[in-house]
Amino acid sequence: MTAAITCQNLSAGYLGVPVLRDVSFSIAAGEMVGVLGPNGAGKTTLFRVLTGLLEPRAGEVTLFGRRLASVSAAERASLVGVVPQELETPMAFAVAEIVMMGRTVSLNRWRPPSASDAQQVEQAMREADVLHLRDRPFPELSGGEKQRVLIAMVLAQDPKLILLDEATSHLDLSHRLEILELVERLNRERGVTVLMSSHDLALTAEFSRRLLLVDAGQIAADGPPDSVLQSETLRTVFRCDVRAKRDPETGALVVFPVRTRKR
Image 1 (cartoon, rainbow, N blue to C red):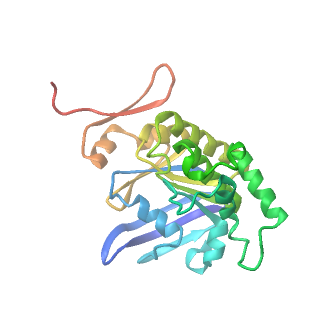
Image 2: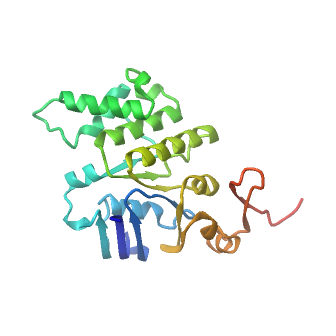
Image 3: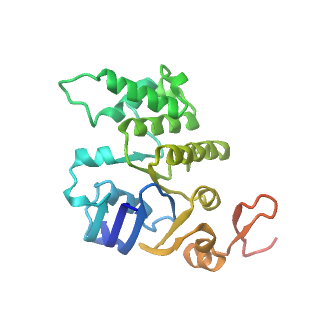
């Protein structure tokens, strides 16, 4: 199977300070993979490298068989869609206008959006279940609605890879579940590759067949949730007593910290 992402001995950082060190992994096209780790572990730095915003110090990165360094910014934008935590807009754009921004890859200053662009935007809004919000001002939406609009904007790009960098961290539990169910459906129906970082270990494990656990700029564990979320591994990475076990009733993986001092 073709690899969507390959990192080989990747190192990266900022202003002479290394963050990622000798990172190697490969993600097959169509996989849905969760990236976990404490703050400062290197998750966001990895995503910045994959989007071309940060140049590696060493090693090699490929996207769908092509060296990242040889992929132009316009080509990267058509291959990779990024769903951020939030989008700040200086104006009260309508939802349809926000989603149309995802078509900027195919637009230029001399050509207005075509009928094909409008059709793709409408399809993206339909898939993300925001078509009924198309005329609503984006700033007036709830947190969950905004994230669905951002996913629609990314879908309008028609990317092969979607990155979610802690895109659900500010949402309540019901909206986190709603967004991840949407992303899972898009992964299944579109075959789009998904890489998502999160601090919600249990929920990410529920929606990922594979996890990458990052610690101090390196891959501490890589594999199915049950093999990655081992209590001993979690204690080492998160520097506290963390337990992981399967719920006997639902079969879901439950991850929880244990306080060190009793009342």
